Length: 70
Image 1 (cartoon, helix red, strand yellow):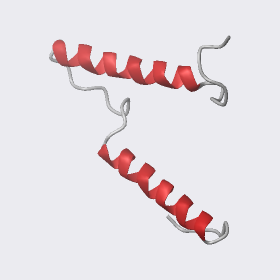
Image 2 (spheres, helix red, strand yellow):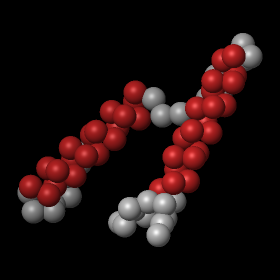
Image 3 (cartoon, helix red, strand yellow):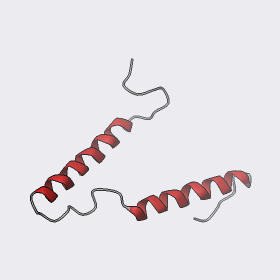
Image 4 (cartoon, one colour):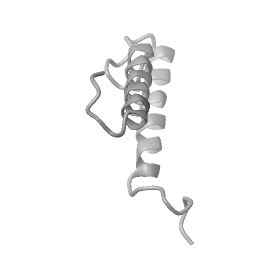
């Protein structure tokens, strides 16, 4: 038996490992008074871009799979 449910792609767990590692690095830097490492963690802009992508994918699907601009 695998560690993740069927249907999850290879690399699913590694993605979370990378995210948790980046969060730990940012926390340690904060505790040491060092600047936050840039580019390690997603921010609000990343979340908004993801939501725009999902919205465009839904619009495309509802229109029969046509190309839809983000």
